[in-house]
Length: 188
Image 1 (tube, one colour):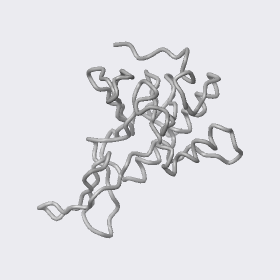
Image 2 (spheres, helix red, strand yellow):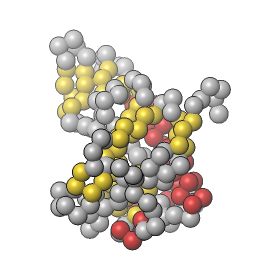
Image 3 (cartoon, one colour):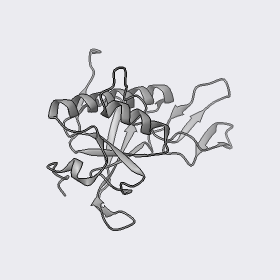
Image 4 (cartoon, rainbow, N blue to C red):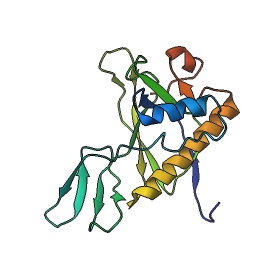
């Protein structure tokens, strides 16, 4: 580990929704099944796609994504700004279970606090169908960084989440509410 790296532990159980049609769904299935060579890379990536726009200063940015990106020219790398990130909730099932599975990031999972910041919404909310109540959390870059660096930090967190799940004897993939039974929800 790099000298001076500050490690922190996630203080809540978090769940990243993954739609069954998404490419990450097959990856989650492979990781959950413990398949040899399966990797958690990509399971926590924020949506970086959207419409490319040009600002009045000539910088390009992406709008309509989970993260705000900018670059200073076509031959330059994309940089992630700090005002967005990967959406998670402290309860599984936010979007239901018929079309969604949830990647579990257990409480106590270590991450590099020098690169990532976890923003907790102030109030609990109900999902659209009023069947689940919980808080929204965003896993954000701590400072402006390249998209590759941000995705690398998220991949490190995903690997740590798989390791923590194994350590706790918990499921990596939550496909129904009973998969998360015995897990305390976040305190108000």
